[in-house]
Length: 200
Image (cartoon, rainbow, N blue to C red):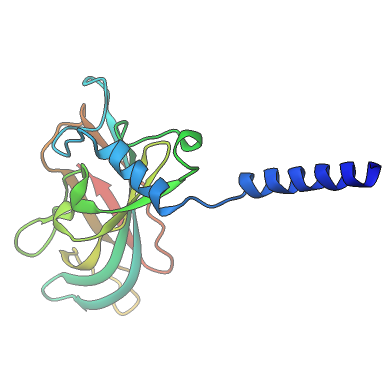
């Protein structure tokens, strides 16, 4: 009898562990999509209190320097941005929705900060126009990864040529909002290249 009781306890414990470590199902994921996008409007700045500021962290990962023309002061680079912010409308209770921790969505389905790369040859690059996916975490944190090649101006100083070092700047500006509504926080880590960022 004791052996049967031990086996029953072992079975119940194993079942509880199995239930605790089970992965979310497709239905769980669909339920989260339905929950967060019910009534969602990407045109609305993602804060409940309209006086709150949306803080956008902006970083850049340089893939390559494709061209540097000292005469025309032109720099062609390729890479991708890593932006993150909190969208208070896109959060959910994981325990109530199948322990789904994050979702993948197309960037154009959610609110995106209108950030422009200003010091380009020709018109400004609006980063939100780049096609890219985003990750939404259960706490409402959104991570977005737009990438492309970019042609920017770079003021050249050849005073110490051929031992000169050039400092190229990526100049960003919020396109359609004031700093009291959206603020950029830069986190650029570019190794072995003299490229810096500034924001207006």
